[in-house]
Image 1 (cartoon, rainbow, N blue to C red):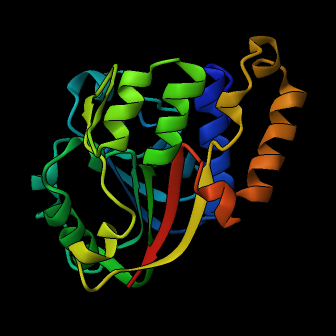
Image 2 (tube, rainbow, N blue to C red):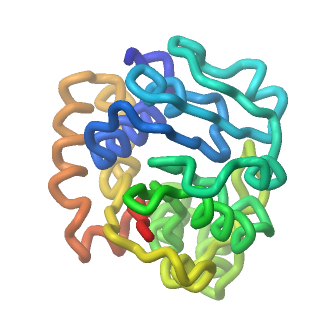
Length: 230
């Protein structure tokens, strides 16, 4: 799918996540917190996809290259889904912006098939500290994060961080199967001409994939991507 219309950083993140997910075909997929539907649209080419997004504006302007069912709603929608009805659940950069994390995960556990998996992407606090210091020269925000404070996202509001270890505490029926780093190097390169160069993007993605499962690089990644199973 052509996603060249996205900002380079967003295009890179999507391409890395999709590579980390691997081939998904013939599955029933739920994209919870689907935003503008880029991932839902991508997966809908070969799967049956239901997308849930609370923002009416994002739903109205979502990507629609492929057919998928779009619901404008929030955690209440999960109550309507049958037990063990989804093979794959997508939840990318969502839980930082909600107080319903445990409730959401309990629903995920209920509606996930026994042989299915959850793809969860979350902010990594150490990576965010590095961004504040190296890229933004914002020492006050960096100190606040080091003291377990939160930060802000321009489009979504307060980012309420949670630890990787919290994930398995929310629902005893779910376990982390794999952890991967995401956006380790990209943001540290400030030359915007490189960012727009397709060959450079391909090489950067190859490098990101190479180190995504190496712990030392995961520790400084801006995001973590988890595969979670029953």
